[in-house]
Length: 202
Figure 1 (tube, one colour):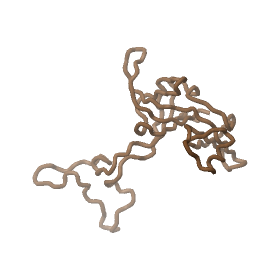
Figure 2 (cartoon, one colour):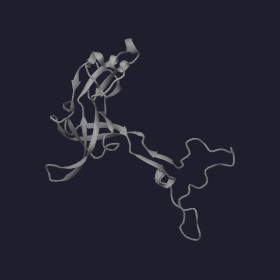
Figure 3 (cartoon, helix red, strand yellow):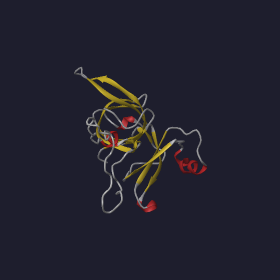
């Protein structure tokens, strides 16, 4: 099982053996506990559920769901696929990954609030001279026929706060004692964002 749930702590820099400075994102990855294992025979599909963190308070249905695992997770995520070796109650941490391994990191990006088309979709601006008042306006958005705006039209609106994934990220370092993982470059979200770490090929 090579998948972890973590929480972004922040960014820092580390020195390589050749003396170069590289930026890394620090993630508190795991430990996670297997809370449920689903199979085609019983549920119609293969999957495993992992729990991360400690919940202050759980609803009775959720507490009953995770009772068999003996965990009290604050976050539960499901991973599709066959995991024959996964057993309910099993726990693992950052030691399942190795330095230099390629991983996929998923999370919710930072919310930017309401943004115009220039910032949100990289639209070109209009001329600043000759009395132009169309500097950051979107321009024409409709058509003569049919008289409507088609769905998916690039317009101003809320920017960011979307689920995204970065593939082929590299593990820069691992601290097994503190359950910390350094990922080369940036990862989605701000400090405290929940991220999913898994191998690029499962």
